[in-house]
Image 1 (cartoon, rainbow, N blue to C red):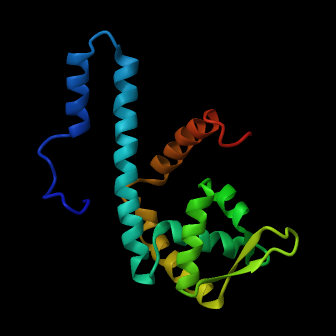
Image 2 (image 1 turned 90 degrees about the vertical axis):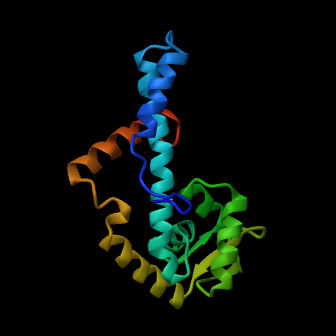
Image 3 (image 1 turned 135 degrees about the vertical axis):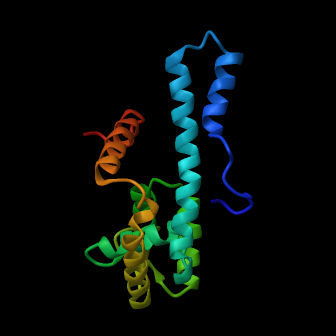
Length: 175
């Protein structure tokens, strides 16, 4: 449950919104009502997951976005990546990458160095303490199955396949 909520509602607010939608927009049709329910559910699921993931990595001095950057650096063969590559891989704006790396650097989990291959660019390099905290946070996320312990493997695979089509249609990648 998100902070500030007093407890579960005695009804599904997405279904309630759907009922209101059909009353106020009767011409929209079932496909539109289904889309509204799906997008509203996805947006709520994002809130739930970000809260759960942030809570899981908070004891390690991380947010989930900082954790993602650290893990990306651990996956790099050299433990270093240009900030531009981090933004590209995490699909976030350069300003967000700068903020994340600033915070990780302040915590001692990464350091910055000029990119020898690009005189204008900067590398983020994971430190030993960054590797240790990424490993500990990863074990915690594995333990709680990334906040999705309530779903079966089949549910998760189906969800991934559906959302993958959405991401591909949006132009995230070419298959």
